[in-house]
Structures are given as structure tokens and as C-alpha cells.
Length: 191
Image: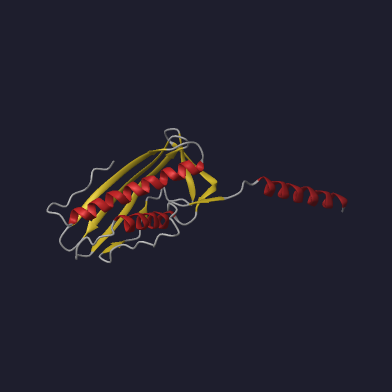
């Protein structure tokens, strides 16, 4: 009986020690902070952003870091606050709504976005590659964006880099939307 109590006590201590050593979870977002005193901008009613698709190799709740040429690491205690497709959609909506305050025409435009690559090296860069389509009754514009942002050390800097890549994507989409009302709709040159 004493051996069973001793074994149970050791197991309980091991479980408690494992719980105590777990690092605290941290949650991040692609949506940058807004000024609480500024009214919330809205997309023009003629613009419809469809749910964003994210390639399987990037669509994880954890932050993903590249380590070397062929290896990636999921950072278990650093998580996106919402599923990554929803994070991208929210970030794109926020940036587009701010950029597109003027009407862009009467024709309804649907925006489809697919993130094909989201890559990062700690302390070096955050990278985003995405394909997107603007579709109206008269025009279909198929474009791509590639954005690489230099990042500093730390997870906050890394996420800020990811936020800037999402903003660059939204800016490209915004320029594409504005080109639809011109004589020659065109894809913007990605910066």
C-alpha cells in the first residue's frame, strides 16, 4: 500500500512540475490597432470580400517559423487569436475600408483572395505571397502580391511584419479596385 501511495505521489509531482513549466500562451492578430476615437470605416457597398483561403502549409493556429532551407517549426505557445483565414479577412477589411472611402463605381465587385505562402525567419523577415481576383460583370482581374518585410528580434516584431505584409496585400487590392474604374484595369506592381 505504501509503495502505491509513493508511486501516486511521484506521478502527481511529475504532472504538477510539467504544468508549472508550460510557458504562458500569447495570442496575436494580423489586425493592427485602431484609434478608439476614429469612426469605424466601412467598405463601399459595391465591394464584397469573400472568405480568404489560406494554403494548408500556412494555415495553423500557431505562429510558423522557417528554420533552414527545408524545416519549419510551429511555436506552440504563440497563437493567432482567430483562425488564420479570418485574421486575414479582418485585416484586409480594415485596411480596404480605410483606403476606399470614395465610391469606386456602381458595379458590384467581388474580391477573392488565396494566401499561397506565409513564411518567416525570426529576427530577419516576414513574407507573404497571395493570389487575388477582382470580378465584376464586365471585368475579371487576376493578380498576385508578394511582400517581404524586414523584422527585428522578438515575436511582437515578427507579428508586426506579418501585419505589414497583410497591409501591402490590401493596398495592392485597393489599387486594383481603383483601376477598375479607369480605362485600362490592371494589376498593381507589388512593392
